Amino acid sequence: MSVTPKGIPIILDLDPGHDDAIALLLALASPEVELLGVTTVYGNQTLEKTTANALRVLDLVGRDDMPVAPGADRPLVRDLTVASHVHGDSGLDGPVLAPPTRAALDERAVDFMDRTIAASDAPVTLVPTGPLTNVALLLERTGGANIDRIVLMGGAIAEGNMTPAAEFNIWADPEAAQAVFSSSIPTAMIGLDVTHQAVTTPAVIERLVATGQVGAFVADLVEFFSVYHRETYGWDGAPIHDAVAVAHLIRPGLVTTVHRNVEVELVSELCRGRTVVDLWRRTERDANADVGVALDTGGFFDLLVERIGRLA
Ligand code: RIB
Ligand code: CA
Image 1 (cartoon, rainbow, N blue to C red):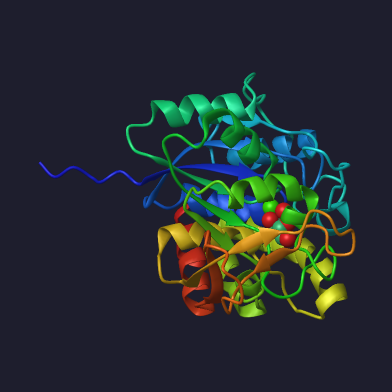
Image 2 (cartoon, helix red, strand yellow; image 1 turned 90 degrees about the vertical axis):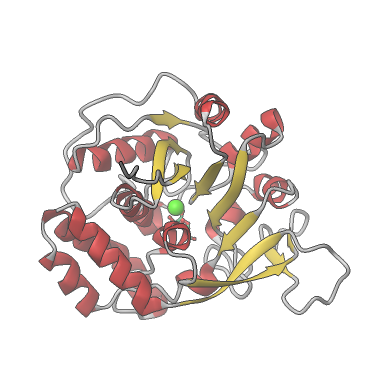
């Protein structure tokens, strides 16, 4: 009797957030990954709101079995800043979503991660798509035992989005990000250089809507998420940042990466949280990350539309 291979065991560490919500749906619809649980962190909104949003999205697709453990409500040492200017007061403005039908676990994210990773037969992949505070706290406790790799959405080789120099997830907690990049755990950095190649088009929206109810929900998310990006970049769509990190796991090859050194700026205020990527090997610093440099945009949206359609 053939046994269906189990997917890569993963934990999503989210700050939903419109694109986090889409990343969660993509993971739920993809047998290549086995979602062991969701942990939440402040970022796009407060921890209370990002946690409620994770629960609401899981309710939408009937996954009230999926554990959600709340984590850090503020950075390690920096002041809390939330991205309400992008994601709205709820953190998931736009579509109408009922309040959560259940509470999150009465277990903190780091405890959930520690317990779940230790209990896994196979090494676990962490997929953080918000500030890296929870991951840094876990690594401080466990040293990264039984973690296969970290595939994070964050950083940028080129320009930032929170400041000219830095991308929001890294900017929000630069000390946590530096702890991750210096951890020696195999790490993929899915930064703005590739996620800004994952901007929806009206044709993609039409394809999503045609897949059914969940596709229509994703389209509503994108409609709101596009407001900020139209005003800022003039785009007729929104970059689905976090889903690119999940897609990188599901379909290797969609994202082209190079193995380079990444360091995080901690001292400068002007360049706080900049990921300094030694793209052309100008230093002797050892490579510590697989940095995304290109995306098969068509392949990414083909995958996203097909998988969202499975949730219809
Ligand atoms: O800079 C984009 C990242 O910041 C995305 O993960 C978005 O959800 C926000 O967390
Ligand atoms: Ca996010």
